[in-house]
Length: 270
Image (cartoon, rainbow, N blue to C red):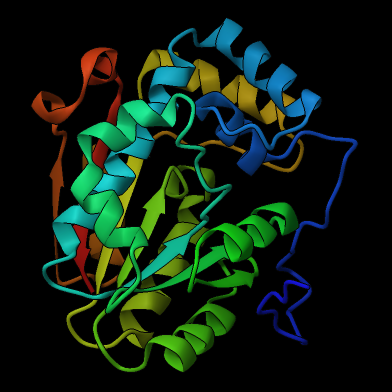
């Protein structure tokens, strides 16, 4: 039987989402757009409904997935420990994920192969946490709210030690309010080993993504989307105490239709 790493005592204002068949879930809706089979009909229906508002939503999700592997690749020379915040469901490489993995084969291999690479995944959704425990060999899967930084940092210290680590957030920062994101980053700055990094992909703020955010709030219970410009995110990171950050939109690296997505990536030194 799989055993998740869970904290016995959790502050009441943070929440872990139990297995729930009756409503769409943010992690599974996002995964339904990418292509994993392990989603439910209401997740897939919600994804299609959101595509009616934003037709390129699947490309947007794939761009975030591509940038996840790109961020891992670009931080792997500096660290050997990764913390996947808001990990979601592991991708299914047998379907549309092949498009992404084909272009990032080296980074995906370095990320998943184990060896000296150590990984902690964090997700408040029980299904996502269970799948990460089962399908990512050697991974510590933490079932917790990422905003519960005490639990996150304690678990990371226990399993990753005091070596620098990279916190990777793929399409997660945009699901957090500015206050929650600022508090999260500030706690990571104060509680992480020197040399640690924060790598995130984020949806840009455009009229089209603003309409998507409004539709997302109505369609996905308990979840909101906050698209931000790169300047706005950089200012938020600076105010949270990061030492430096750089933003890039690697359009020439992206395959095909993914190049036009309003997504950028940021790597910050904590």
